[in-house]
Image (tube, rainbow, N blue to C red; front, side, top):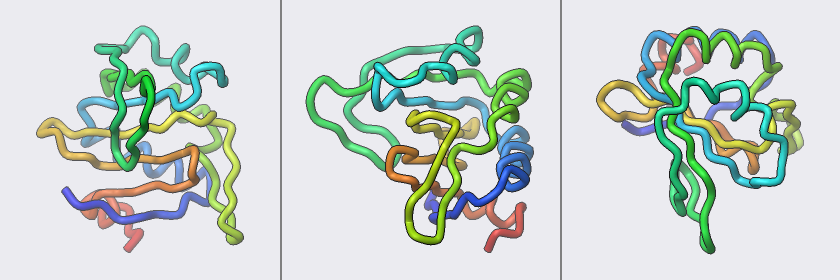
Length: 140
């Protein structure tokens, strides 16, 4: 499924996005870009981790070297409750910068057929959304 870039600008937008994703997602993928960075997100979802693997490629990113750890997480309602505690995945700024209390982890939400519904390249400040989710949220 093709995705479109989206700007993330508020906590309210974060919550609305999570509401839409909770209805459609089957799994969540979290990639630890920097293993020595804050691991609070992984601690939050640890009981729901289905799979852990080292990858060099994931949604929107390719990496050399030994890669990064990717965690596949069940899209359980309790995971979404934990994600709602964050202010947002990150907050885009008009000058192209961003800030986050989410850490640098990239996150993707996948539906039951394996299609990507939403993903971030948090370390670069970008987010992408599937047209069907964007339409539901009236973003485009």
